[in-house]
Image: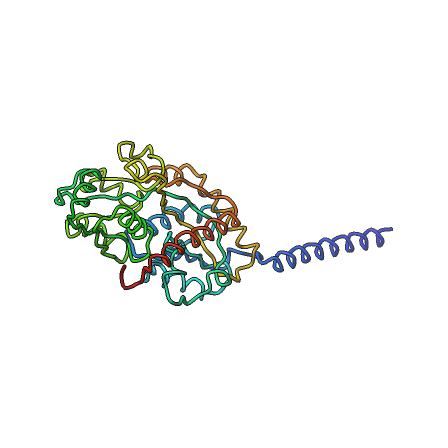
Length: 333
């Protein structure tokens, strides 16, 4: 009897061990395994330090680190309207340790660039749509412009103006190009390599006007260093209640919100994409992250990876059509 009892116990332990091994094998097959315990996670911000992409990445990193119990390191790889950083992400091992935070330029680059170093469908797996925000057209203090009405009247009278954006093909560039074409304004576009350099010249008065996300320009509005003229969403926002929309300023239906998303290399196991999506959704709901983004004018979206994929696909269609129809090139408009 004692022998039989020991044998039964041995069989039970063997079965439990086999079940555990099978579960581990299933997890490995699904693509999660021990992720993310092997090494720190690399979060590429595809624009230089100081801009909204950098800021979004640095708000997400500590929250994500807390959720995943693994170090999350932000690395800035800017250039070519986000293409260089995105390309670096697509070339990384698809093992769940490299992701990228991208901006709305990601939805324009397929039409703007003659050739991309990656396939926007095969080489990229959208993880989550972080949020959206108005773009804000601001004026430098020494420009003499204090309202959009004044700017429009002077533009209609034939006075030329220059505006800066974070780069050719950025949403700010396309939004202002669309507005200038619709109104017949003579506006000259000056592209910058990211929000940091753009804000530096706007604050210094080297450029009369600048268009950037609320996340980027709001601190300078609050300090009184830049004058807000108009926003690109269809409705006013609580954070800038006195700033009119383009739509209510004589251009009904005008809408061009900024957006941010997290992407993964295309061959990243779906289970890891969904695990990161879940962790990011939890991070976006944390009071610290929610309050930070709210204070900067970002409306958190979150949701599934499919939601992100659908949104990005629509943006590629909308702005890609505008780029093609208006023959916008990387060398200028």
